[in-house]
Length: 113
Image (cartoon, rainbow, N blue to C red; front, side, top):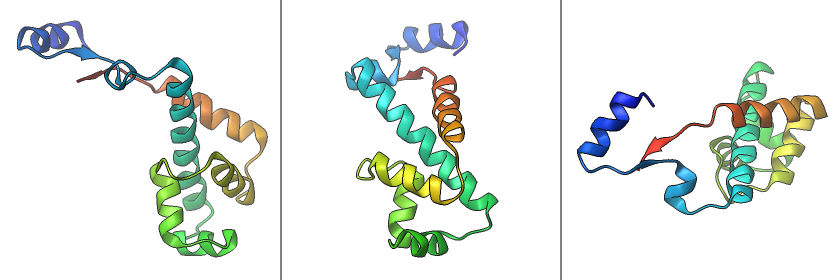
């Protein structure tokens, strides 16, 4: 966030900080969430690149379309195991998984709360 925007928000009574600060997350909790979001985003991109619908991927996973939608949306009820399994099913390598996690960590930013 630009310094001028931050100054204006604080002058208006807003508290500016990170999501982690707002939710009171530990570094480990924040890192875990970022990892899951990175994998979720990668799953959606890889599925689309493979030309599969959510229904088609769900059939391969022996799951439902709504579960795939939750996976891609980063729903907290989705396990890391399921995300990783789905990515591997779509041809992802360990290196691809690591890149998905790193890319999300790099994209992390600060938000007004």
